[in-house]
Length: 158
Image (cartoon, rainbow, N blue to C red; front, side, top):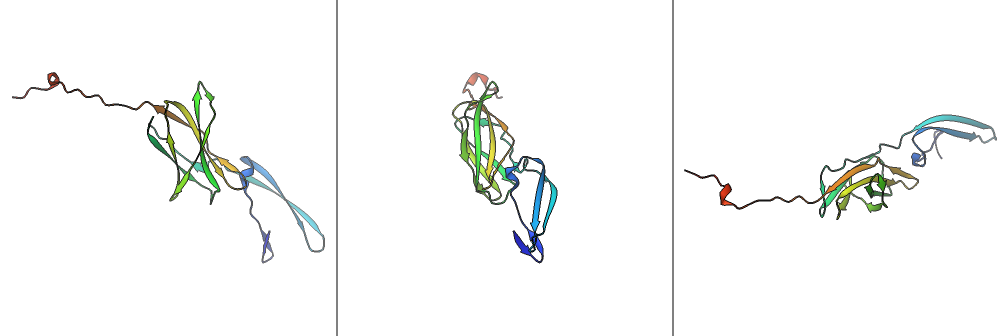
């Protein structure tokens, strides 16, 4: 606790707690031994501090960049967790570190197999963790453009 001009100031990291109402109990003891207890309801809101929109098209054998805005000052680490889904069941996930450029965090993904995947972003605050909502990714085969050099399909000119 820091004392300033008869006021007491403290800070705490709410990431250890689930979203919702939390009761804080403050017990104060003065220099003569008198004790006073205060109770305050706090509304904890950690969900929604991570903003990320999945790309609409992802092809195999191509590096895809996922971006996120993290509404938390100076996190210890930011990682992306990616897992393949098959018939609604998640396979074992992989943690990929994200890096910061400007106000955004980025993670690079590379898929060798098409399919359905999910990802979420996890922020280590040093005291707890924040997690984003799970986002769906659809990875498809690489699209190829077929062209024919066939004179029969050419229009005849005058």
